[in-house]
Image (cartoon, rainbow, N blue to C red; front, side, top):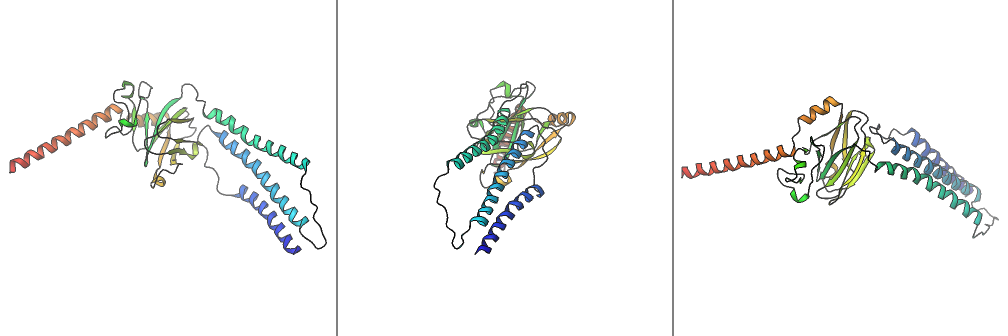
Length: 292
């Protein structure tokens, strides 16, 4: 039996060593960051180091105990129900470890929810199973919205009587373009169920709760096209709820912006389409009556 005990101890030690090697040699790692939130990476690395050291220490301690204190003929175990010195050490080290993991997170969270002045606001609307967006028009202010206003021609539920929303740029189920190095506050709204707007390269995400508006902010720091994911199970089409955010230089961004419709233009087009359909139906009905 002692030989088997030693094998178990060696296996435990190999688990610790293998876990460390896998962490450092693994080909799977974060995508290259594309925002100002390097603090998120730093916080995760601190957590890795603290939990990693604790994991290796515990596994190696277990291996030592199995090797050193296994059952042998003639050996009696000493009964020691309490060890106050050991309990104090464990309590202090655990408290220090937890504090070391939580403190950076609280620091980053404070920055995450403190939006700088002059940050551009963009609304993200999630629905089963697509992403839509709204950007402020020339007045730089987003108009009000309400899910009760959702209808054909008004998929985001904007208030048609709010003059501040008439020039808002509506991007329905298409790519969102952002300006390089321009701080942006993402206002997150859902019109059906829980969603979560997540772009891994931005290191920023937040749940979207029906009936409320959540937010986060960031600064795009490199150009490119980045995939949007829904990080909240939102139904059978959850896996396909994807989109793209394109970070542009000034000229490319302005060219894209000029191609987009305002809320007023989309409403006018919807009314014209409805009028055309009604005229076609009337003409078709008149032609049918004449044949009779």
